[in-house]
Amino acid sequence: MSHRLYYGRNSERQKAPGAMSTPRRHVPFGRRGMLTRRKHGTQVPKRFVTTYHWKSGQRVRILALEPYFGGSHRAFLEGWSQAGRHEWTILSLPAYKWKWRMRHAAVTFAGQVQERLARGATWDLLFCSDMLNLAEFLGLAPPAVQELPSVVYFHENQLTYPVRVESERDYQFAMTNMTSALAARAVWFNSAFHRDAFLHALEAFLSRMPDYQPFDAVAGIRAKSQVFPPGVPGFAPRGPRRAGPLRILWAARWEHDKNPEEFFAALGLLKERQVPFRISVIGEQFREVPEIFAHARRYLADHIDRWGYQQDRTDYEATLLEADVFVSTATHEFFGLSAVEATLAGAYPLVPRRLAYPEVFDCHEGKAAQEFFYAAGARGLADRLADLAGRTESNDSLHHAARPIRDRLTRFEWPNRAPILDEALEQRRA
Image (cartoon, rainbow, N blue to C red; front, side):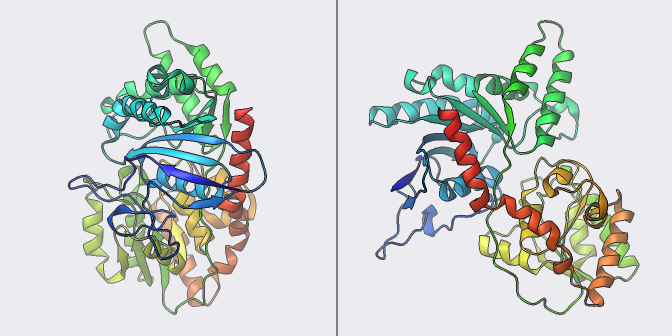
C-alpha cells in the first residue's frame, strides 16, 4: 500500500525581501521551489508529491497546519511525513513575519480547508504547531474539521521565548498558546524541560493578572501534555580525519539567546593562549544580527573555515562531518536539533549543563556529564576546548570518545522516531 503527501499552495519556499533564507532540511529542492523526485525522467511539482510506501498499522489521514514553514518546524513535518506510514495533507505558510502569521493563519487556513472539503477531502486528525491559534481556527472551520481530534505540537512558546527587554513581550501571543493548548485534545512538547518551563511560566503569568485567573486551565493542559521529541536524519559514517588543528563548530541561530558573546570570548582566550584551532560558524541569520559576529569575523579571520548560513543541505552536512567538536553556549534551548545532528555526524559535543541538554543527551551525572558538559562561562569553555585541542594533537580520537553519547542519540533518527509518533497519532484517532 502507499499514500500521498500533499502540500498546500502556500507552502512553496519563499523569501521575504531582505530576509535570510530558512534552512533547507531533509528534502532536496530543484529549481523554482519544486520538490524533486525523479520518476521516468520527470520532475514532480511540490503540490503533487511522490508516492511513499507505508508499513503495517492503522492508516491515519492527517491534516497538518503550519503557519511558519521553516527551520525546525519544516524539518519536523517533512522528516516525519516521509519516514512515517500515514497520509499527510500539509497546509503551510512561508516562514516570514511570525507575529503576522500567528494573527492571520487561522483565518487563512479556514478558507483553504473549506475549499478542500468542497473537493471531497476528508481527514481523521488535525495536527498543528504552537504558531497556530487553534481555538480561533476551530471556531472558523467547517463542522467536519471542528469534530476532528486535534494535537498541538510545541516547538517553542511565547511565554518563555527570550526577549531583550521584557516590556517588549506581547502577552497576547502567550494567551494564544494557552487557548490553543486548551482547545486541543492532546498537547505535545519536544522535551520535558520545555513542558515544565511553559506550565510554570503560564501559572506565574496568570498569577499576575487582576482577576478571573484560570489556574484550572494550567491543570487541564498539564493533564493532557506529553513529551514527543522530534526526529533527525541519519548520517553516513565519516571518513578518516583530515590533518590539522581542532575544528570547532557553532551552528546556532545568530541571535542573543544563543549567547554568541560567550562563545567568541572563549575563542579569544584560546587565541591569547596560542592554542591552534579552526572554526565554522554557521546557522540561520535574520535581519538583525548581534554586533559580536562582525567583530569576531575580523578578529578571528585567520581561524575561519566556514562562515554564515549553509544554504544547501549538502554543505550543511559536510560542515557537520568535518567538525571535531560541536559547541553550544545557548541560554535558551528546548531541544537542540543542531547539537543532536552534529553529534550523530561524529562531532564531540560540548554543551552547557542546563536547559534541555541533560535530558536530550541522557546524561545527568557521572563520566558522561563530565565529558560533554562544560563549566559555565567563557573561561570554563576555553579550558575544555584547549584540552580537546591537545587531545587532537596527540591523535586521541574525539570521534571515538563521543561514541557512547552518539549511540544514545540514535533514538532520535527518523527510522526510530517515526513509528513512535505514528502510533501516538493512531491512539489519538481512536
